[in-house]
Length: 487
Image 1 (cartoon, helix red, strand yellow):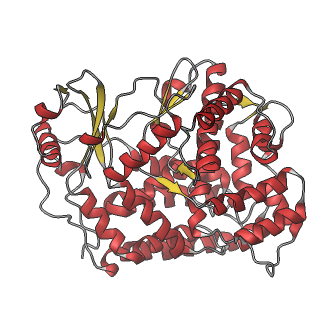
Image 2 (cartoon, rainbow, N blue to C red):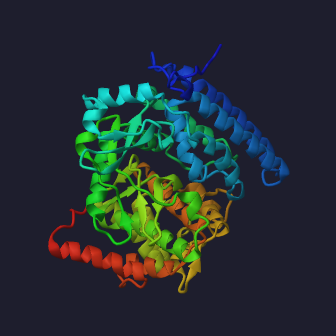
Image 3 (spheres, rainbow, N blue to C red):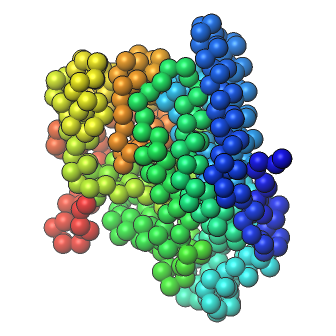
């Protein structure tokens, strides 16, 4: 019996309108392959762990084999499972995978983000005109039906408005939303998927699987509604309009629907070209990415939770354009303050204060067998970029050590990690942190990161040239009364 059918929304079916989502809707029908793989993976991991071989060549082979199984199953599953796999393809693949083996999972899961064959031009036109309720020629003066990019949910075309503005038009593949919605209505499916991830280690963690599944599912659902994405992008564009080194493309609201998003077209260097640019440019781009992520979070209680390298365009003046806002997380001000209180205590070298703030945030209970010094080491140690007094270069090796400290139940903070419980609403903060650090590391960026941390946690005046520009921009907006409301 075939437990997972091929979805009619697979790339091979884009030449014709789908006749249905093709996804089995029953919980057992969709979850059965995951349950089977989870049991198989957990059994193998336990056997290797008991023999002490998870860290040697046998363990490496085990993880390589498991990564291939994941990629194959998620690719066949389509729907929300494939989107969840894509979420793991750039951010290291979960706290239970040894840091030195993260690359194995990223390489296998990266196939889930690979460009898909595009829709036929006739289907792209049909979808666009159905959504806009008018002929393409009425909405756009010119339209290139050969896409600039084609990915898992939609594809992007270059076009020109009648007023001469160059725009990018994102069109969602027919049937994708229905397929993913079918999975999201099956509330146990993502929980089963996350349970599968937990089978990678014989050491168990305190982890609210269903809470995390609800949080990830909510973000996936939002990503499918281009009206929500357009609203989020418009909000970021308003915040950063006129900023000296952060650029968010303007949204053309009258040409946006649930499955079509029209925005200003941005040209620049893609990620692969940025990696080979001069080091001084890479340093500036890294600071722009860092200040965009954490500046949005601290000032406005929202952040882009998809720090993927394909979502940026880099410019020769050191500025960066941020392109994709399908996965945006909004927090309450008190949630941001609670998290910042932990790092402020770390910045002050206050171990007891760090422990108290962490308990208040819900990461540990006061009754957990974890000492204040262990909690302090969990947050403080191996995060040298935040505490460095001098210029610090972020490397992939550094980020690997940091990930091991923060997420590995067999790493330096093993006891703290095993008893930690991340509040579901804060799940995506970790994704943002790891994503930004990973991008900066691939750029081998050097900067006064510790001075930037002092800005955030010690209310110290900015030290870097870009920091001074950023501070002056927001101070000027505030004085002029044009600064959007904070969260």
